Length: 34
Image (tube, rainbow, N blue to C red):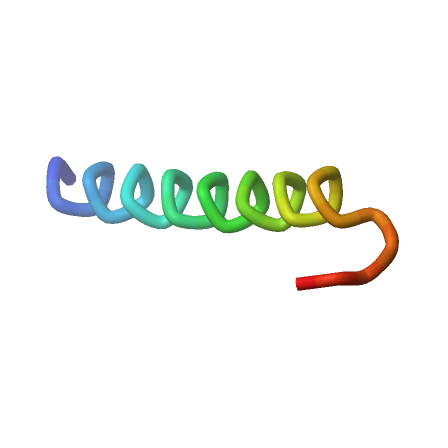
């Protein structure tokens, strides 16, 4: 049970950081530059 919760928390933090990175890239380079 605890392991499952930790795994879900890890997946959630991973997806959140990934989406945050995409948002940062989109806001820092709106013209399409990397």
